[in-house]
Length: 71
Image: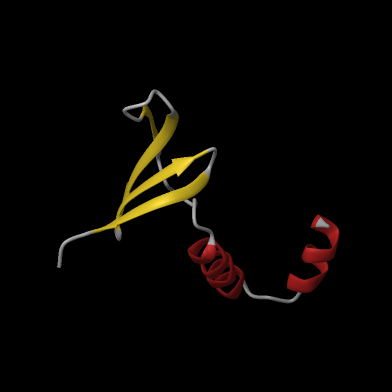
């Protein structure tokens, strides 16, 4: 699969390749998200992450709750 993707980007300038990488990373929900392990009131393990949109709560790396930031 890596070779297939590599064939698709042959011929791009370095700037185009950088923009395409950033565009893909932007769509990736967990890109550059630092999670903190914790447990809920029942002792269930979860992960918390503070992002530009608010606070995310993950259970088993699946987003379960999103608290939106104040505007």
